[in-house]
Length: 393
Image 1 (cartoon, rainbow, N blue to C red):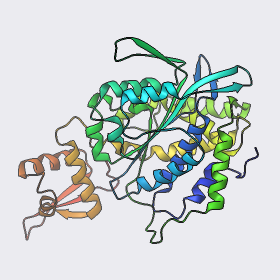
Image 2 (cartoon, rainbow, N blue to C red; image 1 turned 90 degrees about the vertical axis):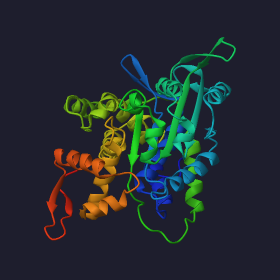
Image 3 (cartoon, rainbow, N blue to C red; image 1 turned 135 degrees about the vertical axis):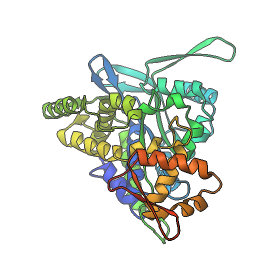
């Protein structure tokens, strides 16, 4: 069936424009919608690998402040209307495996003939509910599933083994940054699981919108129609010669010069090219069904990824190994917010968490990092903290 929109992502952003949620949230929700609609029916052969367009996306923002739930609620309404299978948010590992096994579908690939796959979308407004409390076993499974294995073997409750063929999992979750410490064990930070995630970090809502979100039902019908159309696409993505040339140039320039400098994103850096290829597939599917990744698709994917990556290092600021790393982050953010603040103000703000000894450690840490300046008010004897120009964690 013919598309009603010139571009799905642009149409989706237009539909969501009268909400308080940041545009970046809606952008990545639209990307999740396309990836979930493509499922495991579309692929990009890459050497000995086959890459699928599935995405692990996590929206990061303070609870009640950034409107993560609004963005996800709009997406849930759209994917439900388009008939895309979603898992329950509070689903257990065992139940998710069972749902995977029962979600088998078939399609006719133009080159491979009849194919079968087990595809699913997890939408979780509270990622802590889905992942549990530092559940290393479940995190290992999710890491394993990211590559859409042709066959995944697991041990059943009765100690036998079973297999699921052609799995494809998409995840769109949300959490506040301070919840990550309860969700992720330290060894997962920067490693296999988090390196597969696109973290979409926002500090505030996009705007104050007093009037409630009133859907444009004509536009919504077009969005649902086109998403249903995307669910019919199958086959092999191909790069144009120009696109391949652009990709090679980009890859060689960024290979030994990581865009995200934080050492905890070293694993992500190794998979960054895969993230870009997956995103380029989604950008292609956003405009039509021809499965051609054009130079425009590649450049659009590159801009989306690089824009998102700017804020990604803020994800792990409170997940350091140092005892006072989280408190140091909160104190620094408070100084940034106030621009200039006294020690007594900081002590009053964090009186439940900080004492003189801890404040001394936090101060010395921030000074050693050269992100704050410390002066003395000679009249009151109070210390005055301010941010060094360009200072950031």
